[in-house]
Length: 483
Image (cartoon, rainbow, N blue to C red; front, side, top):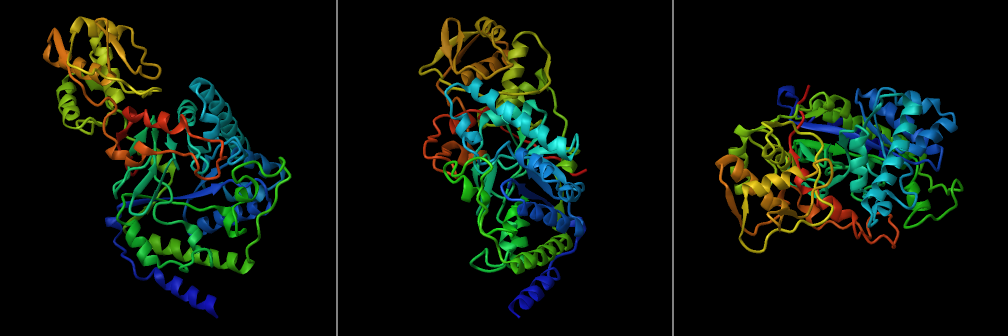
């Protein structure tokens, strides 16, 4: 009887929403963390959740662990493959929580070694997913848990990915964790060459499983009113959780490899009645959102069509760029979307005689940049000579030798702008902040992944968070357009 009351309330929830389609503002992506390769019953959850979305006309984004793709094929689960044909697919690392995880691998003093390992693993994951589900199907990437790394970001870039979903988890009125913008306007965050859409923003669909939320099934109207305040909302779900009471990796990989490979323990089963009710709740929630004109449900295949073309930087743009950087040492939003590294590359090329710069792959630093400690005079000739020796195809140097004296990269950037704009022969650089402002990614400034998620106690995060932080110059803000 109690479940019948719940059903009635859920079914009616969709009636108390706005239906003005023209007013749609909040784009919504439904993520499905498709990761459990330890239990074949979880594949039933993948199939059933995919079909539940499709029944309501919703295209979900299923981020699939590479090894799971092979397991699906190995187990002959053509029903799962067929159920996912209508959905957008992405990767979610090679082995997910198997230790060492991506962050544990990346906590290496040798960045190149960490990058090569990440590239090998991510390429294998990419290949496994496309080998099973079809060439050209992978539209985005996603890390496992909070196990992110600069090496993975660079590997995804070099493999041709654009959307790095899940690096920025946001909870509680947009308070970001990791690579996430605070506040309600969170769309359009690009960081280290990847668009970083938010994930699990204010709501997880696991709350629709009876008994999962101690406060009961949430009030749909309140959930939608909260989500509608954002310009982009990522709603997450784990298909294994409507089958099991605990996460598969909590049982097998919590802070270590708890079982031998392929001798996995199944997580405790959930009451099938709760699983059945979950799907009733999912349908009611999706119908409520679709009936609410404040939302537009999308996916990364669709969003890719709306990526704005990059705008070249010309000499005529430099005065506006300099004024913007003097006011706020941060990414440029007018007259176009450029990151600080875009501008650095432009001025280096222009010091060598180039008239324009077409933005491409950008880099930050591997080591903290160090600026001048006292006013220092540099010459235009010295800046041009230094520019000729700079390699823009790799990470930027923490200091640059100009006229036989080391200055910081931000010192170099501002001095170069003065030379190119004003035509002066000499410029005095004064002590300044070298990285700039973290105001658009506040949590990143102090992020440390040690002790988070299911990482081992040996993971100290000596390098992972700092290396991601040092890419601040690659930050830019540029939303995709709705096709």
